[in-house]
Length: 77
Image (cartoon, rainbow, N blue to C red; front, side, top):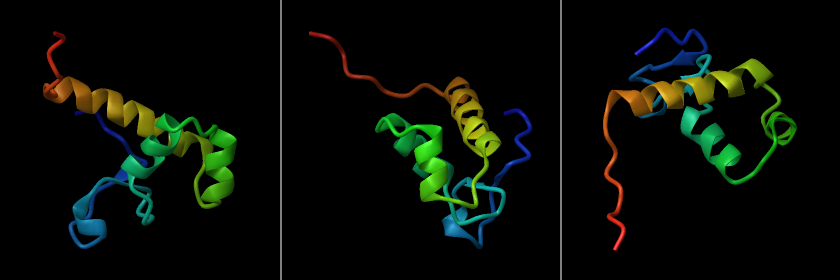
């Protein structure tokens, strides 16, 4: 996994899930908002402590994570 300075993992915070810059905002939350169709601007309005680069780093982190393991996908019939 590459270095992601804006992504922090602390076992004493949020059960150790990857968060943004030590904030209690999980990477997965930002990714779910993007997947739901929210724009960067909407996310930043919802979470004023975030910065545009935080959102982009979440995407880079997710992309790198998919290279680390295979996820099971349903077989097409």
